[in-house]
Amino acid sequence: MDSQDEKIRKTTTKVNTKMVVGQSGEVLLAYFLVVWSERILSFLFALFYDVDPELHFRVLYTGQEGWTGDAVFGVYLLPPMILAFTGIAVVESWKWWMKWKFIPHSFVFWMGALASSRALLGGVVGAFSSAELGYVYTWAFVPKWGQYILAALLFSGFVLLLTRIRLAFLAMSPFKNGIKNDFLRTRYTWTGFTVPLLAPFAFSVLFATVFGNYNETYFTGLWVVLGFIMFRMNNLTSPQYHFIRRYHQKLGMKWGIWAGVALATAVSVLVH
Image (cartoon, rainbow, N blue to C red; front, side, top):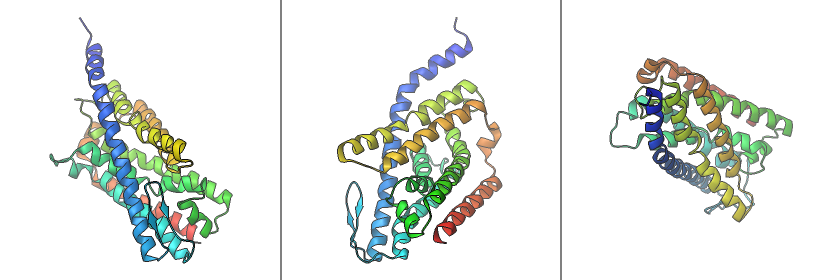
């Protein structure tokens, strides 16, 4: 006779393949939609500032003339910030949209999670790249050492936000008592979060290999790192079950305010 733990392991192993494949597909699709949403916003702002934009699959091309500080901030800073605030709002309101039966909850989750990172993780990538948010650093006259410090702060800030993303993710666990059970929680994190994040990273690496340098490789690589951080986080501790299911709106509002303060501070540092 199998023990209870052995039965659990056999049951979860059967759904692991489906979960990994399904979640990987959703992560990859959500990643494409988020990246292209940002690119289209940048294109529209570039049209507004009249810098002769051309929208391509790989990157947004612009002309050499007409660039000002306002144009740089509008084209390269505002789109990721808009997506970031939208993504944070989606993740923080998970109790609301998870009640809807007609939408794929995990896909909405990944859209919100990936969008929430475009400004913070984009700022990390910009410190090590001369493209996109790297242009903002250059036009704001932020020295290289300052960019590295800001990158560390932005990454740390997103790791804090990851604790909020974690709540929405665990709330979608398909396993009964999956939050309280250590094995189910870590298993679900591994197959539903950590491993699926390799899909956009593998695509960006392949794309960079074929077409040359591709900044999204750094962005997706950071998400792989975050996947292991999330795995470690869920392996060590479990949030209170009632906290996951009932959700404290006041605490969510507090984190939203702190996220806004962090972004406002980062923008003020860049501008000045």
